[in-house]
Length: 70
Image (cartoon, rainbow, N blue to C red):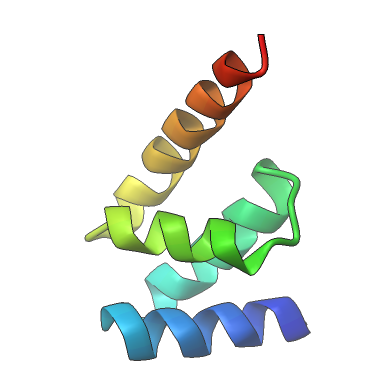
């Protein structure tokens, strides 16, 4: 998938994340956050240090994003 390839390349080069974390970021952004925006993947990449952080930080981003629209 092209989105995943782009996320992997950018997160590895900019944030030195390994491929496993990069793939999880791409999966969570695409499927759970429901967006195709690379900027969301990069924002998430800045906040995580391990694979367990990915879902937690994505949920936090979505929570505060939703609360800003109220």
